[in-house]
Length: 344
Image (tube, rainbow, N blue to C red; front, side):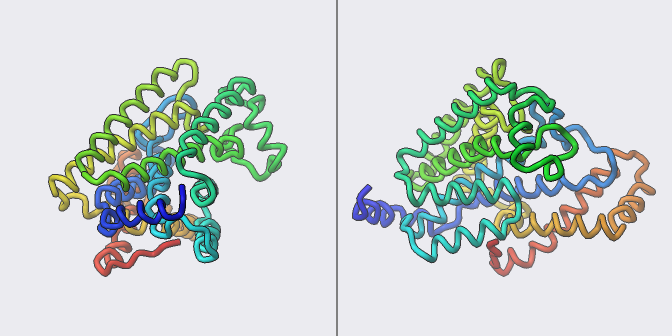
């Protein structure tokens, strides 16, 4: 695309991005709150919906991280669109700074790759790049015993050779954020980026809702049609897992957009918007706080206090996680009121 065309297109889009898309903030907030909730069970047990699939399959908990990557792809388009996708020292510095500040391995890598891809690649080729990444990863899985939950899996072999046993996930022979499976996660974020472009370029919210819902349904359908041959699997971030979760995220965003942005029903989602406007800050803070509470014994004491009043270990664990999440929401509330957005 020529520079003049790009500037004209951006000028036409400018009115669309001045106003925050509350439905996107709400979905981001639901996702981040969900990530905090499922990562901070109080005891040794938790309800099935709050647990990840052991191997193949999909639980509600498994939707949280892929939703976040999908939303991050959308947000990356919106963010870089403000700079006309021009390469400058300011933009490059911002991308690198955020990559190192995020501290979360897969999120940081996907953000960095999609950001630089958006700056240096013509955007019309990003869907083709997504397709190539997913097909290439499918071939790797099929030829490398990629669905085996043992050390014969090509993903496990490559990770051990690159990083060594001591630096890998110890609870499973397959690192859930391994090197090769990141290719699929990048494709996942590319899909979100493409959706971001569609959202910004569509002038009518009704058209956005319809397109999000229909394409989401198509992605889910294709994913489940292929699931017999290529099962849904979060730990290896299988291609069908990408299709189904991106489709689910798209349909969820369409639903929220309809109720929040079209029908103007916004009061119910304010709690989630608190998390949605400062997502990475609150999530990283939750990780730091969880480590501190665990190392000082505060977590054990707090859970014991809850468990003394709630004898059901599953319920006590869920209550602890809920209280922890509400506490983070309490930290984010004054930031939300004062419209302070902390960008890592």
